[in-house]
Image 1 (cartoon, rainbow, N blue to C red):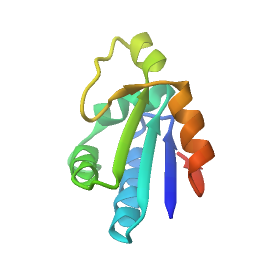
Image 2 (cartoon, rainbow, N blue to C red):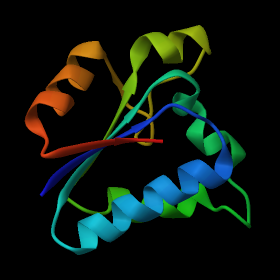
Image 3 (spheres, one colour):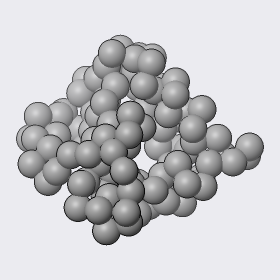
Image 4 (tube, rainbow, N blue to C red):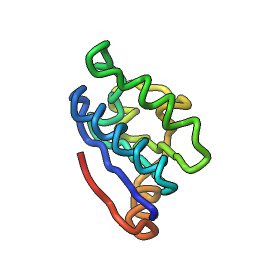
Length: 107
């Protein structure tokens, strides 16, 4: 299965669960893309010992079947720089993910 996950919040527990699901899906052999929009581009900001988002993201990015793309406009609004964990993309990338994936879920 090809799964797209759309994150639009910086709420720690929600994003932690989204990446846990992404990692489970990867472990089942799926291809998973995560698109970050709005506050979602700040997903790692609230990582903590209780909700260790960074650990989940590191595990996710170890897989060749994992991709993260972030809305460049949303990043610009927040003065956020492009990084491995939050690579800049655009609305065309979101459209492509919606069109090409079997399932799209939002958090």
